[in-house]
Image (cartoon, rainbow, N blue to C red; front, side):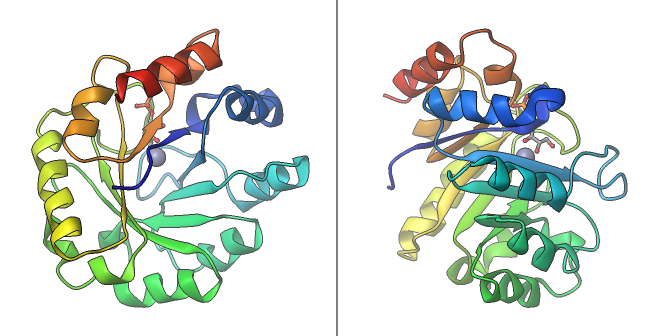
Length: 220
Ligand code: DX5
Ligand code: ZN
């Protein structure tokens, strides 16, 4: 298993001070920045686009930016986010008409492709794609909003996904997104995740370094 990654989601940051917020979580020990893109079509909420991603790069952010596209259609935004400095670009397969084409498109721009599965979306989507992606993101809430409760059935799904990744010898990160907190991150890690998105659990606390330190300690 690869070393654990903690990826604060900017969705819970103070958007009026986004550059400073991102600097602060990175200085506090975060590994990646999770960048949630919502279009008010695939999900019932609207956030930020490539302009904001590019602004973070211009601000001086050098850490990996983990772009989570909750948009439909997907392909037209891929070149935009690649040009804006995205490191990973993940999408929900049911939002793309040609999943393999979208994965190849992401890689063609030098970015790392990821697939995102909602809580009720089956692992079967991986049958013919696990060998072509760098990241598998399992949603542990229904996408659209920060601050929702972790859905416990996702623990078993994580274990199954971990088995698929290891059995195939794939170098794919297994990421979890939604409701990750201090009191469940240990169980989530034991279920097989190695990459942890946390929005409200980090940005909702006053001392980011203490929170990220505690999350890391809870990983064991
Ligand atoms: C939900 C987003 C998540 C969200 C996580 O659609 O994809 O990244 O910001 O927020 P928390 O950690 O508060 O559940
Ligand atoms: Zn997300």
